Length: 468
Image (cartoon, rainbow, N blue to C red):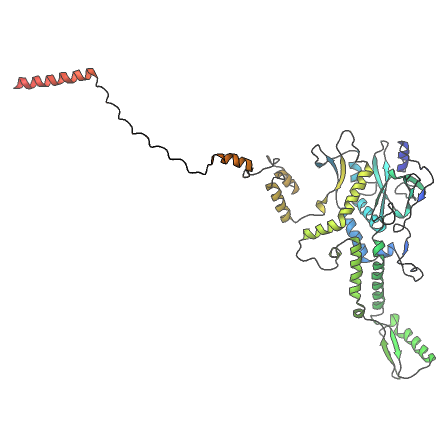
């Protein structure tokens, strides 16, 4: 087992050599320096801040952890495009394992959280690839951005100089690897295309101001919420007396001894000398610094507990605003970096184009009522089959549920015109009266019956004559 991915690349003939001396790129706004001046000359005035200091401000911490946690919980999916251009979830022995378990000590949630945290704090996220003997990426290790330096060769090729990192199996510092072995996700490349800029570059001063406000309030309440002040006398006093009174007051009634009873004579008076919180607009200033931090991270303030919820909007609408303004670009960038880093843009074994996708159902999850209404409309609109809707609700399939259904109530205008060509709505024409039926001619009597009747009449007549 090789300890560094670049060694695997060398074994597979993928080693890229620089065409000349490598040049480091300017890293202003990126990972260096650790301590930054808010403005020129701030160092001499003891006005500086570091990334760790800014992270101690609650708004910065809340924004970074919120974004990282929301993206980290999204399940990665391997997608493949079929012949109809439809992307379907698939599985591949080459790519699926590294998506489910990026390395030995992190699951996919922890991996994505560290990725996004590094990007938000330093502007850059670096992942070192570890390949197998086939050249397929089997593990990814996120590197400390303060230990990575981008380099450029005279022909424009990009390299990265790595510091020692035992977790990533980089045992020796100063190792230089080609860009093909690094996944580099960066944001806000203001100063150089290879160096991202963290949002802390813009909101660091606001975070420092917020911390100063909190520190001042802490000192004030540590002194028993009693401000400093001056001792005044109605007349002139000597410098020695003033110094003696001051030392006595500080020693007996300041710091941990604040709140004790002092006895003043000669019309001495203690007058507080501190601007009140109302006069300093402390709450408004603290709220403003948090809003500045939220604006730099593109996070709605209500997501971290600042401000009121927007009125007239549903929870789903507010989450959609948060996703569109803050998370979407980070998610799309991560998906694209993974596609390029794993080589998913190259067709293998005749399979269609493949790509990674983060499942958004865990982020934009609706309440059961809204979700059911949407599924009913999709099934009724012949978009989804009943079984697809049941699967979304974690229900089993039904017989006959794999077919799209539609009521037969819509007809094309051409079909209606063909149907109405004979003017079916017109009044029917009057039919002529039928001819009267002709009575059938009486059937001629039967000869035998007639002869029998005549014989009977003759017999009757004879009997009557004989009787007479």
